[in-house]
Image (tube, rainbow, N blue to C red):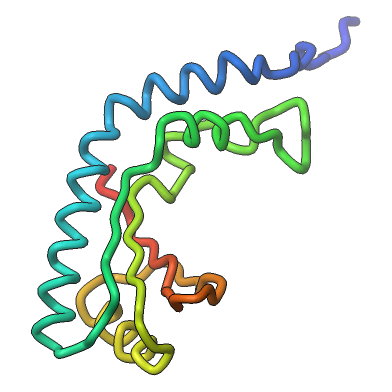
Length: 143
């Protein structure tokens, strides 16, 4: 009688996983750059309309090298496997907007504005640096 055994699991080739992830991301990077630019313009108009004074609004699409490094992070549960099996679907910081304020007192106003204009999926406050900033509001990507 033959025993049912699972095939051996081979460790991931992290370099290949990173390369393949970057190749896939590069197909979409221009979309995320455009998305970040449009959202930044929307935010600038909303901030102006609501008379909320800020220092600046910055935007970016994730750098391909940074995407590749993140795609190749080992899983904490199984270091022979990547943390992101499907990096293009699992890595969520592909487009970023940073609102840099002049004073901390504007943060609640900005928070209220972001919640009124966008469906906020995840929120985190960034480190307070010489110019305070709200770092991250994550909205679901259209995939």
